[in-house]
Image (tube, rainbow, N blue to C red; front, top):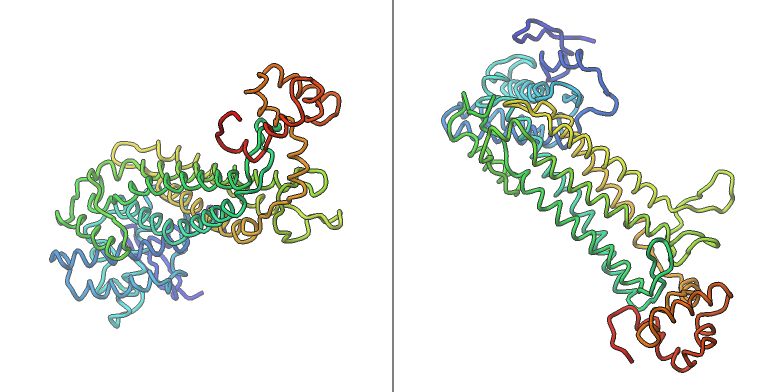
Length: 467
């Protein structure tokens, strides 16, 4: 492999000749061979770093801190980063310095090298655009990397997550309306209970999902506060006094999201409570999805010996040895994703507690964990919606069979003969293997006409008055 010699404050180092990155990125590649196959930064963070450097150059130019011609070159190169044209030049892993310095310098080096190439210079030269003096003007990794974290995370919520969740929510609301008339056995403690409708059951899922989405949206507000302008420790040293606020406005304009400079830059560098809160909201969302997925696979269990009150799409063979077996694979995939999200949340919560003095040095792993949770949930919800939820249908025959056998229909007799007498009827029917109606009539407390008038499953799915 042909190389070129790059230098930084530690001296010279050989860099692959066909790459835009420079000395500090190359040192990181040698020093952090950790999880390289699976933890290389992806599109969201690379895009965010491009947005970050573009907005910073524009702000510095407006404030007279950067030559407009140099700023234009930086903006052009940053636009290529944003578009994904230079992704192969961002090779660094998550497990690096806890401030994200190497990734910040990776962006500085790539953008400077490309800008100099656009200016007619050689790849790897530091003129006319210098990675530190110009691309990183008025910045420190300590404020730029958390800013990029927030840009990436908020962007992914809007680019991927909310649309996927909204689609599932809409499907569930439609199913709830379609099946509002389907009366079925309710279940508490995994035991038979009084009737509900399938529409009410699915409507409960939709309401739980709505609440979880609202929680994520609320938590996102904290992510809109950016650390930019705090530089090394939160004081803003070496930055124009208006740089951070102006750069934040540039990011808001570029993304159409309400980003702004954080009210307290010391907190923005030394703690990442906004990400801890967002991760917790994603965990709550994951818990809601776990409830939905588990309910679906229980209600669809069988097909002959389970509950089997709903059917779901049969997507692929389910066994390498049992012919004809089909499994609820979309539910399983979603629930596995959820366990990963719970693990990511534990990582974020612990990492968020580890700020010391003016800096939290767990930034990259926090960013990776939150971004992975967002992407996994988005993908899994989209898959579950299209390959499972849209195909949910009631099994009317099985529902009717179970409803007819539900001993908890006896609850409708409480008002008329009292709890104790009703309990005795239910126990008699259960132990003697008779129908609830037969046991009620045999008790001498209820006539056939009374039973038929009082025990109406559909009327038991809503508040009612004594008849």
